[in-house]
Image (cartoon, rainbow, N blue to C red; front, side):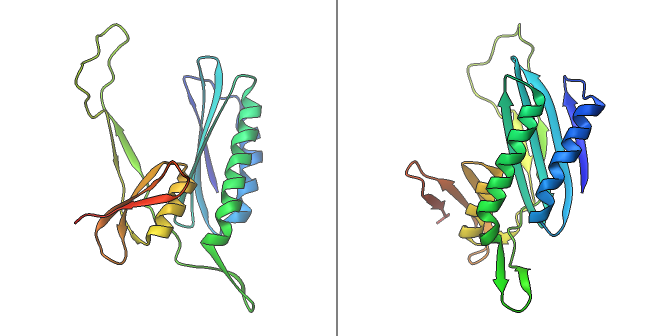
Length: 188
């Protein structure tokens, strides 16, 4: 697995980079093919923030941790969070057969998300009263079932997920309801 460690307004030391490279391989046992992990370290308002995004087996996994104490603790916490999230959904991602051991089912497919950020104003400027689009995400929408989309949404730790329904070929949205269940939005 390729591990890319970046600092956001923060100098990444060799010790921190080594610590991340020691901890992240713990997640490799849950995937057949882990391609890349992008780790961003930063300090925001006195909080040590670690953001991790991992791509493997056609699944995109994301986690974030904020702690006030130290960066090493944040790294430990985010790896533990990701591991528990993957362990929770591992049975849903992989089927088991008696003869061959684990084999991949039709895995949740979500393209690599690319982001483009809009211009940000400086602190001294007044904010406009009318909201504007400041961030755009583009991603390949591969067909999947609503259950697969809900699993991908949970792995990304988002409250909604846009996907192409494999049965109807329409664009749908699955979202998490306040009662903990999922909702599905379909076009007419």
